Length: 336
Ligand code: KG4
Ligand code: ZN
Image (tube, rainbow, N blue to C red; front, side, top):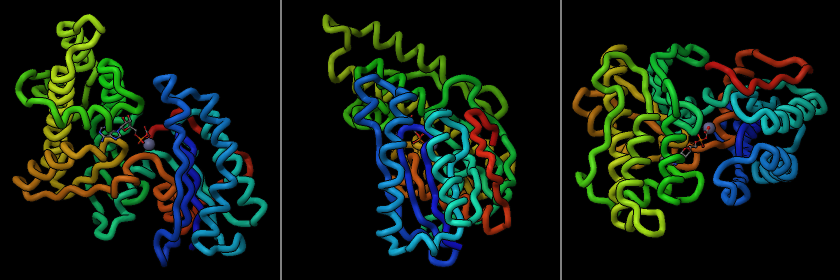
């Protein structure tokens, strides 16, 4: 089955064509990062307008690249939530309407299910069951995954998501949005050990997270060391970034290890924007090797938002016979 995937939940317009027999045929992404960066975060109204502008040219381009005529498209999957309501409505309206016009079934996909299944697009995909750590700008969750649609929440952040914490730390250090990659880059020149930030909730049992205390700690450290221009000197900023990243990574590693021990599963999938973080990947690989478990993640471009993961997740559901009616529904808030 050949499925067109559409992702418009936030600030990236992602389009892809996935075939259940042949794999991923083509994908393209238009990122609005430059548009939003001067505001220091995503402006919902601008995001919707830009999705409207880009979506059809991108679909045309992906079909051409995959040498696929519209008559060969057998289904359409669009992100139905969670996300920004206006942005979601663009992808859902266009996707559902094209499916109606092309007389093919359509399905609304959960954005986090897309992330969770993104490693399935790699050459050596994980087998079910596994534990998934979903770490994005809006979510930090540990999920027990038995198969497609078989998800049990093991733990989640009680306040900020890990990506959100990275974005806020970046703002404190006067770095651009989205902050994760910038903090990680700055941390490379930081000295480990100059600052030690708290590892929130690791000494408590359970699998929930909390990152707001770490945010306050970062803010206070920046304030204590700031110079006349309102910021600490360059090396101190790098040292703070390093300590911050280390605290987030080691918190996530401890909880992942605990989730694997609790479930007895030997496989961990990490997905979502923060799974692109190199120190997180390395930290998990090292910790999991010790307990004989393996970590799986998507290639870098499929860690952050993209159309390929939505095409993949939608194709699995459409192939299983699930479809959506003509009344278009989006769910800005939607538990997995
Ligand atoms: O999954 P994603 O693209 O969008 C959401 O669904 O939220 O995740 C975006 C988040 C942002 O908070 C961004 O700062 C973070 O992922 N991120 C990173 C890295 N790359 C992206 N955080 C830490 N290290 C990275 N290398
Ligand atoms: Zn995402």
